[in-house]
Image (cartoon, rainbow, N blue to C red):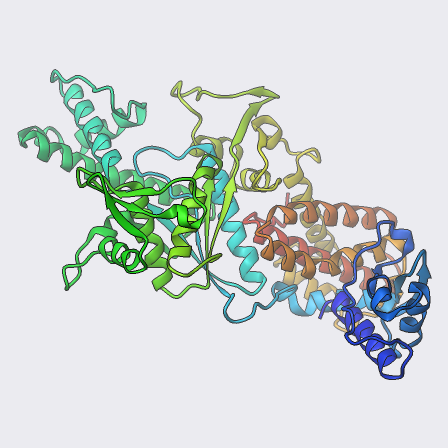
Length: 567
């Protein structure tokens, strides 16, 4: 249990006892609901319960606050409880409470800060990236990869069961255009006269794909009729692009529980039904589908959309929205409690119709859309729009190749998803304290170096070295220096950080926390001599450093970033 939880339980007990003996006259006890004081000099935690219940209790908030303080049970947690201002209660924690955090971190290790989520809210389908398999992923896809993967990691640590899904847009017109583009380049490379149509994918990667096919298979596709050749080359190109996406994302530490093919929505089952036809019928059964001007419509205006949406065009062609209807209906059928989709910010106008779709099935609020803003790519402060290699856009692959996985992920996660990111390539490559990921990783590596020195050995992992260097019975009561207490307070914040970041889908907060924790460790390291101190103090300070190492590594792992032991 985190310190905040224990302290809130004490305050709740005090309020209940005050009501029971008549010191407070209330029909319902207000929750403690502690918060951090704006000024750290006022204490560790503040309680506003007296202010919040003053009207109901028909009393002076300061007198109510005094009654709460007077009824606090005996405990080892609170060193002082002061009443301030109009009725705030400021709590100062006993040093022993903070020292207990060190022991908890070292005992719980990777489980430190784990939370729980009630049944009925726990099972989450998280869909993100969903790049078309018709070209290389752009830098924005990289941001959504970092965001989705880290969101899943944080939510799992917070107690959710998260199923990660990549929706493969492999059905429809864009796939035929892609196949035709490859076919034209294939013919051109083999010396045949073929003009690239206006509606095409003209990037250099299409020529590269065509050349790779020739290198492997020669000119055998020339013998096929035009339509068969286009389909055959489309399918080869599709498999190549999809495999390239998988490979890059795995390198980026991003994996999925399922790659869902849009084509599967159109496969008939034993009853001759498809996922599309079943979803359409379910919506029709609810009374929200009608026919007009030869087209099939969804009456989304009944749920606040600005206009009704076409599901099937008059020529019989299904809209992209119809595929989305079927896909989300399929997700509902898989028993999730909540669906979370991460989309690019340019899809903002698409949200209302999808919310309407969920309402039509009696699932209002089940779909949650997180919009990811794009990335402004810079080099030494100047905008970068073109790849030096191809003269086209800089791809996600090229960015990772130049900057590396760790720096790319950390910086992509450094701001809230609804904010643009200015990503400076040269700044991201710097190996100094100006680079936040380097700064955090260096703190971790510095602690590992400290453990090697204390253990008198270069052999073994940081965990093994810590076990050798720090006795199990280290007396933590000697940790009373202000920089030690500040570091322990920050370690105690981790559980609440996880709970809120998971609830708010906000993994960016962990990048800020990691930097703050690293800064406090460096401050502690500067102010407090460790190796060479008298044994009891050395052991305790090593234990504190080791706890900081564990939480730094855990925070980085939830961001999908490595925690090197040597730098």
